[in-house]
Image (cartoon, rainbow over all chains, first blue to last red; front, side):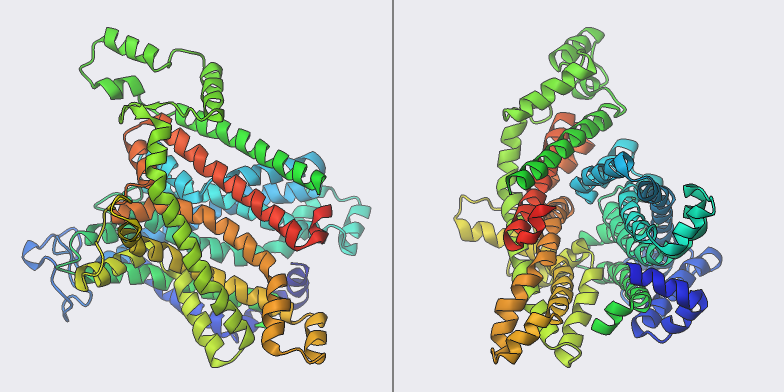
Length: 290
Length: 314
């Protein structure tokens, strides 16, 4: 943890980026993530087919030049569905991560700066949240507030809060005894100001690594909730929902289950590689061991 | 050691109490009147009122909370309105599916992950390491329910070796029961095995860099012996942590996997109870799962202290 922050202090962000692009995991992860993000963005202006247009005559067609991933039970083009589904997955995961950072990081920083009972309360709060199997609570939350993408975001985001609080707290705790923080305190700066000016910039790198990991977990969780019918609702395509629809038709059309699943695997793999690469670059101790 | 145990048990109890308050208050704000849901839209106001009385919905919140918690403490989880049977019976009936499923998955994932992790660490940087960790990297990214669908397609639809879903029960002998749990257990286990293998590898690498390992090798101890006796024991701590955390993931994973395979387990019970607004069942099963997570974490913490006496002072 502390080595990470030291590197960030010394090399600066430009230096880190230069190192990152020499790291194989990072480059592969970066390319995959960029392709998926581009796919989602392009889907706003163009998809191979209009998915609101149901062509019953073309239902459950296999792979062809016209439909590279085949068509579904309504005759919709699966490639187009996956492109639009990427929007949903990314949106849910991004907002859930933002929720975790937005609430968790201030909490963690506060606990580290204040110590004492605040710190103890935060750790006990973390214990309670971690005692709930995340998926179980997500199912409960979405079932209570009704199945919708927005509730899936809340359900996934809540579990990101203690994760980021914990990471921010650990990072901040390692920084507080440093000389330059002491100097800042001697200069009369308050704890809040020190946190904003000195702590946050130096824990940004570990938060970034955790962010990519939680992003990947969010994509998986969203897919699971949509598969159970608790995420995005039809007609909005989502990868998990596509897999649910595929299950009963798998005997006649296995391709229905293959491509949405591959989309999830590739996206999560890309994000995990990106996170691994970043961590390798930011933490030289791990880099040597790998 | 006693102080350590007392502190850990105390924290566990506090966690459980806070969790019970959270579960109770979250589920009590649920929109919809359970009595109305039970009786249907055409119920007369009198019938509704007597149903509410019978369900104990008229008592103050705090009384209902204390009744609920007090009941659970003595094994009375209340009565399900949709199944019209005690919740504890429902749980017992479903646990014989979910518990073996979670245990088989945990055994499978451990049996695969630990040898693979050790193998990769011992061959760091060589082909075996790169290939096995590449597979693990992909395995971490595979959603278990998608993997389940692929397994169903290959083994049930295509090869017809096992049923595609459902549970035959334990009445027809252990083998027929295990057979219907085989695919779900593999689907749950493999993504977990991938995570565990990665953790085992990095824990082993960390330990293998220590001085006492070099000393043991320098003394002329065989490599294999050092690996299994000296390194593995010390690498077990992070591995145990992840295994403890994974049991919670496996239990929650049963919600989704039991739905894929139509298994009548706890996960499917809680999922159906939520959609039917059968609150008392949801509350009971959720608390049971939370309690098992707390107990497992406690056991893991105590195991650490047994494995590594230095941790007892904390």
